[in-house]
Length: 398
Image 1: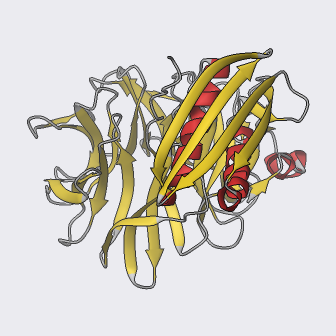
Image 2: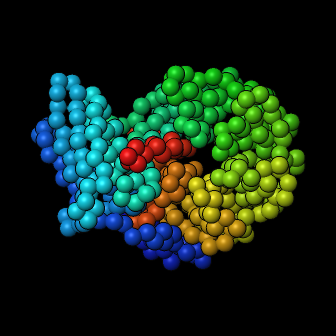
Image 3: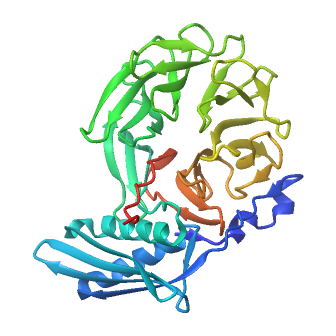
């Protein structure tokens, strides 16, 4: 389900107070015509998915009258599918690609084609092949779940009757760090995506939670309470050692490492209420991000490091905001629902995932920041704490 931009900006003055609504990031989307021929059992779902991927890319938009185009043909041979595709611009073929997979992987091939077309036409990565992991809570317990941008629904990577929370995908896509309370303690775990198993990384007494990977994957910033109140630490994935970054009487949590690896944004109540601060990766030079809110939490750096998204209280509800990395130009992203949390940037910086109760039950949503279109990603249970896989490495540069 995709919501129009108006649902984010609707009656902004009535809801936002002094906050300006989020505005489109300003890219001119390239019109692209899309055609799909071949096996009639597959052409319709394939075309619908390809058009959805293109329109949600934030870079391309489908149009019948366009100088650029994607023409594809799909054929079935037993249990295998083959898609052959040309990407054209100005009447010239700029990419020819063939994809083969089992019939169960139709959507995987379409996502790959969409991302290759985005890269061939714009030189930027697409997000169609990305998956989003999140926490799923049902009457049976908790699950670390995952799904992509297609009708296949979610898959449960692991299930537990104990609380699972705050997953964080590693930069190389191989691992998802998360916190589990299965041993009656907030332990830090790592789920190996290829081996489909989890192992415990850290089990110091108290909380070991809100993990965030450094860009090189060598460390994980966490909030831990083994030494008293919650403070920010760095856990080394190689040695298993833990180094302390903050040492205060206040509660310090939700660390977010910048794309350069040189700064950490985090939440602290040192001023009396939860606020966002930014410090050096060594723990020095902490400064408050801005003074726009009485309560804010869960900072997240954009991939370019020029913006920070976070959740804050506004008008009696919790909403998602975005500001520049220096705290200026605060913009409100969500206006519906009373609980909008867990902002997570997509790997290209053109999308934000977040959790919201705007439809009654907490679910994961994704907003494409050029059109401000919102897509609901989950439709069962209570879903929150989204985290993105890395963008698929483009194969378009032949």
